[in-house]
Length: 121
Image (cartoon, rainbow, N blue to C red):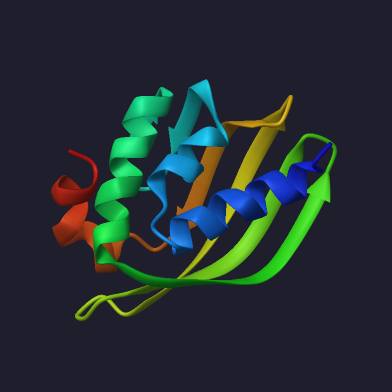
């Protein structure tokens, strides 16, 4: 059985590789997403946003990771295409029965504000 941290790392590896099909395998059907630019519920909505995000994304570098029970926290850098560039971020995720049920992102939204509708449409 995978640890909760391993589930979250596999989710971000799939995102870094732009493998949306694999990414979706780690999401609970009723996953909650909370971020500075959008809130949504449901696997399909989160997958759709991830697809749009991956269109702009060059690389994800995880800098630190912590696990406590059902919760996992990562500090990482999103590397986007220009003009956005590097965006430091953190995420608090809840994993239940091997599936991510909650994603709460923390980052400065200003660099992404102009792309908000493109990502979260």
